[in-house]
Image 1 (cartoon, helix red, strand yellow):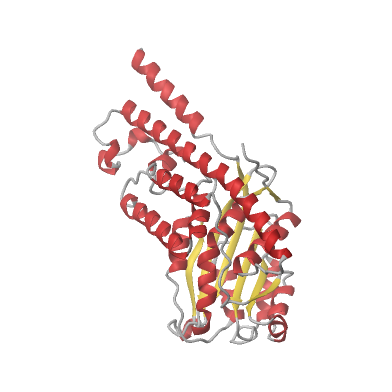
Image 2: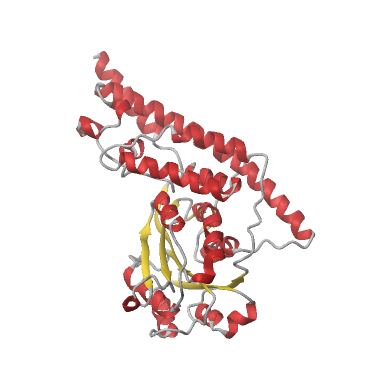
Length: 379
């Protein structure tokens, strides 16, 4: 009787612990980014690497009816002479995915080479090949960035725009150069024809990172958070190493980028790893009692089911604690950054880059169709 009672307590404790985070909505936010990877676009790729976690955090703050949507990102590259001419120099780097580590890995692996930039063709490819939602109330965004004429190539961009509009997908264009030049080269028309947004950026401009007093504390908690991930099965070891390598990639950009990645990892509604992490997998419905011993991480081998369940609950509790610490510090950090941005704006400094444009565009469009941005206050 005591053994049964103990196991029941563990199951109940597990259920309580796994109930953390906002409720999950059936809504989706789907974002496809189409990068020009011709020779002149190194600055664009560097900006994207520095801003990807800022974008993830912005999107993950969206709610629909108080619930968190599923967030998916896709990546294409185009205009690279290393790609096949028969494919119009286009490559799908990543299909729509919720795997944030893989999204980061694919982005950091992009390289530039040559250049035949066919915007209409890459938009058509993204429209046709990605698994877009059929729900008109889901947010579906394509961002295409580049610096050559928008009307090049065998596919008329207007035809691609019409197809996007019919699917309730917004095409948003980011011209890397002068605002008026982008208009002259049809980048604004490429956005407005699907009711999307047109921006221009200086892709060679250095990112204006803002360091805060909270960054080092957040990164320390991130190191602790990593200790709560337990790889299982054939993917476990590989994916755990990927988690660490993408931490390193973020740190290699700037301290603020590493902090923003840690903030994204603190959000259980967006940073989920059911395919390789034991805690997320059990939370997602995997039956611990039916797992083979060789599938389990070393820390769980050779234990009774009750001991495994107890360890699982303990580690989930640790994860919740570290995520909560990061989330609390993140609120203080965002307040600090907002004040610093205001101060710099009063001095005439512009903070305008790939990430800031995408964030503004996503938030504005999301609120138009019924999403809200979650407002978090420090505890």
